Image 1: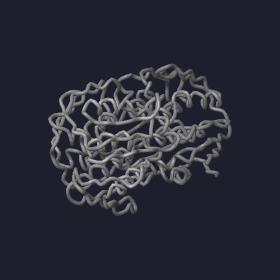
Image 2: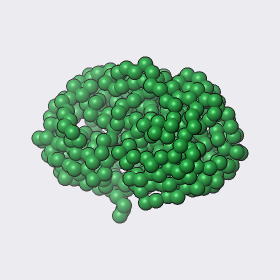
Image 3: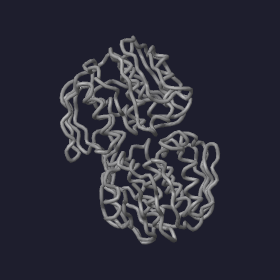
Length: 434
């Protein structure tokens, strides 16, 4: 699939983007391990979250739906999963694979996890290493420690304290999920704040977990109790429209019911530092997660040195932030973001390549990028199967001088089903061609 985009336009309207992917994943995982029936609303029916849902069905969990975002999970308890008949196919979802590595380490059966071509290139040793310290037996593939992954069950786990070398919510969550099955206390200290959806949701399921400073800890051997979950709209999906409305003159949008967890709002903070006109309206709390309506009007953006403290809080939003930087006056510098090189693609290099094709001066560095604002031109860019790259370059068309074609866009469905239809409705001139 490729996107064909015509230049110009503005964004208008009030709308809701799909449910938060991180929370959707975790609702299935913890709901399956809980005692009782968990009802979920707002579930993201994208391919990544559906891969997690299918994995738990394959392990014997009865799950009704999804139907219009509603899912009912008949939990089997922490020790009620059954050995799957086949390898668990997690598609494009690194979140599923890393979190399941910890969860499966505590089971009494062996499991093999596989993924698509993109996921099969992503590093898994960062989570396998601390899990082995807990007593898990995990086998990755090749010198780079990539999938397929084999997790050997039936091994007793013990709690550890782990100082994470790199901030990663997926690694933190994998260790904590293994900690549910471990003897004693499991604690993780992170070098910078990362999303805390796992900790919040464990609390929501009645599991005792404590945080002190940058350290979070829990004791193994407890129970998860079924609950109700209302998944807010995903700020990572909202970010594309936040940037689009900021750069397209005359735009005025309101994105409704968006999760504004403080570990996820780096994109708002960075855009405001660049001069964006963003208001948070109707702030409230839903199921332990802060939620708001986000109004964005067009503004004159200016380049900045992005504070390194904000990098982990906006790690998934940088592709579209690079589009904002290309439309902002002056120069934008990003440092401390080497994590972007091991996402669904090398997001630093792939974005730099695409921006250069469109006439923007973009210089990749080992841990970031330097972007000088200019006139976005026309051309064909390749997303390398990375959904966030594809959607970022779609927004670039709002300020381009000519048509943009984005190739290899099928994976947009992993996180944002209906992206083309919603984008068209609010003012983007986009069509998808197979």
